Image (cartoon, rainbow, N blue to C red; front, side):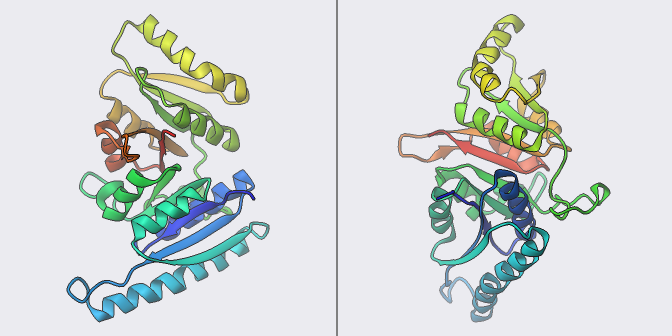
Length: 277
């Protein structure tokens, strides 16, 4: 069975945006789209009866309404909805394990909130064994016009950050595939700590298998002269997607790292965090 593109819907401003992004991604991958909402009843000491009821109603109503709208925009796309009951990070982690990737909508952008401003987003990124894409609420640029994606599909390049000392094959593979699916250029950004010739040799060794597998992808290499996090964030302006790798601890928890954390807090493009297997 084909693994779906799954979108975890919550009550943030970016949630519906993530569903539109996920629908476009599913259409590119010729995969089903699965909209899931995770709801957990909160004890009275943590939330009022009214807020619990509103959250429950939202978890039932909004995914169904969003799916109906997406079926009109993507008549050939297989779209299902599912309501999960339990701790959202745990439910989303299980949903991600059954999927090609998991997209999550987040409301905050900027230095203070950022993609990891919410505990659910942070816990899901750390625990998921599949790529997690974080889609912010500011991803509907009117100047690009309306299309089937509702404006959430950006025609810019795909950007990937590469640590030359420990390059992530998973992140590179995901980035090359994403660029190929979009017929987009791939911008490879890497830090520079050694003589330029040595850096170039290490980069080419890392990219060689992917050049062979994706000969259609045009690649632009960009050494980060300053701070890599700043370079990645700036490159994300107008990008279709920014891809970051995440190493795993022995206990299986992904290590976000200072660079990734900085990018997630500042980047305006959708950001895919791809864990090592």
